[in-house]
Length: 289
Image 1: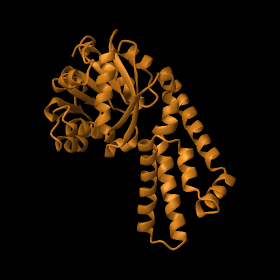
Image 2: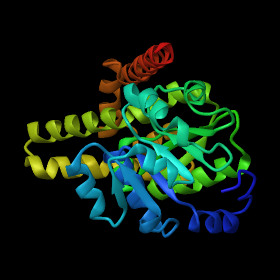
Image 3: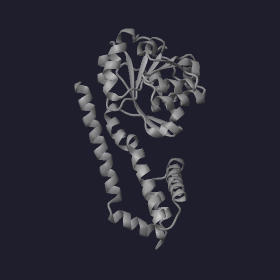
Image 4: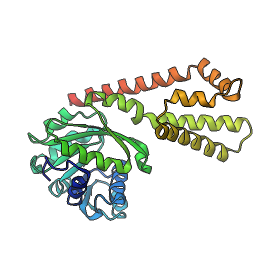
């Protein structure tokens, strides 16, 4: 897999058709990515190999037709693109374990480990190894994820395009400097939890006012889904769309008044800031190990 190929969509698809993809770690995110790659037709199931220490996890993966192993070195030896999908605290020992079988001129490493910097990975891999760091999020499990990627020192343009094409199979994918990935973590990485809490709270409000629990949850979830789709599909500013719902003297503007008095927007801003700062802290600890 040459590092200077893949300048157009057709070239990328041709490149992927012949790319062997390996996963170090077979957890939920790895499984979501593998399923997305396969269902899109970009990567054949037989061209994917996954390692994990859990036999139960490997059994689940075999169910989608990929090859499995408990040997991390076997994955790297047989892969052109290696997805590092283990927990952040074991990235370093795993990379040190496979270091001797890495071919920098052949392989591209894609890390989805939160807080593990590109610099840290490049130091644990042979000189010149191409690395791309990605911050995905949980909705990737239902092909509705929001991922942001940052190419490393040695990554070529074709590498970034290839990774972006793959990640689009599990949602949207944008590119940004690595310095912004902690903020990305605060918004989209941790964001699904904020949305889940909002859905739960809306449903609780509906139950308080007499709605059956199941109906309240379904309405709350569909409402957030629909609102998000309107933002993405119309391209309008969220504030503009909010104003369109708030009729003069109506129910919604009265509800918005309550949210403003309770610091709704300020609380969300504070939550994003807290998650971002925690991500920076975890990244700093990871770099010291």
